[in-house]
Image (cartoon, rainbow, N blue to C red; front, side, top):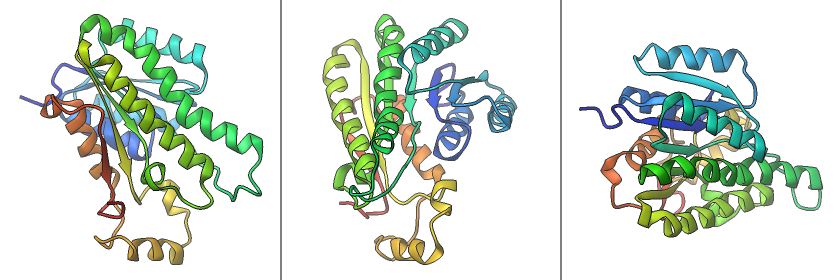
Length: 248
């Protein structure tokens, strides 16, 4: 029996990177996948085809995760089309890194809206179905910089710290209805985003990680699978660092 056989997950920002790795891992375990990204582009179509080829129902949705009304519409459509929502993975996120003295209001607002408000938007919309089911698992992607902060990332750190507070609050609100809420705080993960970092800076990062390497999207995905499945049936309100002991 596969861990997510016959279940349905919504995964935001899943056309590439960590989100796509989570979608693939869930599909391998029998989960039907509704995933979102900002645009219906070639990446979305390719991901949809790749997931469908694994024998599960899969559909990509163009969605502005920072828009409350648009999110409600998309989640209602997903609930109608898939019939259930067993897991919600809030993964959509952006960075606009700069020192506070140079940071514009637009850079602050954009990161808070995409990274933090999107978690509110999708959780509020998906809880309606989960409350009716009296079951569900919410997995929010935070970051180690949301736990410990990082110079030049005050907007990103604030958004990811906000996710942690939100995650713990929702766990307390919805626990009596059989709904769990947890967060993952990845460390230095090798993705398209981190690939843009100059090699010398990347090596300096890795030298400071006790395990002496960056993590992979698949390693984050395995943790998401644990939290979405019944393997973690009594785990709620927690933050799991996936960081090679970088943040302890």
